[in-house]
Image (tube, rainbow over all chains, first blue to last red; front, side, top):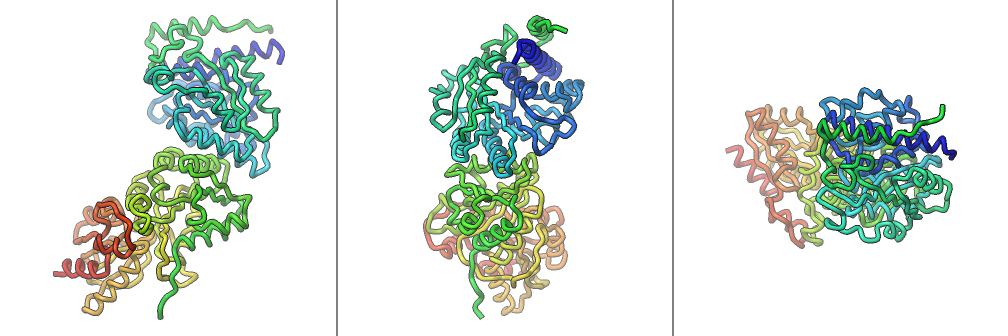
Length: 281
Length: 311
């Protein structure tokens, strides 16, 4: 990846953050914290790696994306709109009656959503099912899944993880969004995720620990996860900052599920716009 | 002539194998009770279409959802107690809400895992599952109908809960009988009283109808194999033409077949109803017939209730 491509991706991530905060502000409802922490992984997947066709969202050969931490969907909705699955104007309908953009992702309403999520702990099993289907059909697509660290307190995550090992799913790339915060407080307070990355290793994953908000590291980890075809599922353990990119949201669990007011919105927009890097023509 | 007795779970095992042979997208997702749920032959003959996800029901439902998004037709196979309650929210959120083509195929419904005791008996499932939007709920009465209804479920594009039982039951139907999801089978015509049953209790209903006939009472007997969508036409005909209905089921009297029928009777008016089923109490380890008797799920009680309605 050359430096120009990296700058382009970083700017895409910033644009995605801007759109995510914007739609949450307009809806006056939603989850900015987790959307901002996972934004770099979502951006790298959609704008660097995933083979998808916005004009044919159900194309059977496409790569899949499973947002197991479904409440972070403003990040994925922004990516889908920016890719052209639906119009950018539709982002303004988030959480409104009749919208394709439900409070949590709905595969039947929203083009580009590969499976409905929202109830934590469930998405990874769905992703495992998709990866098994690829193996059964001899297809080469990848399944990307973003899982919250708090979500890993759910037992079903580990049921799915052991299945990924059993069926040798080296077409499954799981990003753990390790922002260390959950609704009621820090993960350490609520339920310590002791040795979380090591747990994925113990369940048979190759695990790469990175700074999950450093685009260069995110891209390098996904590249590695894709090329290492050794029969083992891949875990990218991303240390991230909840609320990344908006100073007053960063590392604050109060911003898990709160919409910014007008003044906060303006400050957030100013800060995020300032992150845009000038690209050479 | 004594009719052949085979369990409905054996009908499932036969049907799923035949379906799998014809369509490679038919998959079995076992949860470590495949032997008991009769997927053994499928596993042996079609290993490429067979998954066993271990003792992890939630995972089984989620994986099935993921498989269904890729065009597969997975049958999640377990016992009714686990397939309805352990994974209820996964079925709701991941399967019913997106209307995915996943079948939950459960053996050991009702009190039939009798010796296993209350932990393995399942008297709540039909009520729970019929409450979920987009779900179809089916309980066959014998081996022949089990086979046919499994095939009907596979042909239907959407979530289906199939409830089988452990014990061998008398054959009610001849091979080749046709079944349609949502369409009750009229087993015996009569205009004095209607007996609406499903599953293992269909035979008990037929036995009761014989006893009533000996007393000069002509009972209509319906096999309501589909609890949802309920065959409203058939129930309304019972209301209109017999005015008296006894429902019979191996399920809690709350929220099962009897309640579904009661909803229609209440809306429609013009009929009196008696519900026979498990008396809102847990079972225990005991012979199946004893557990049924302890809850009044007997031919004699059907006769008694019918006679009460006729007074």
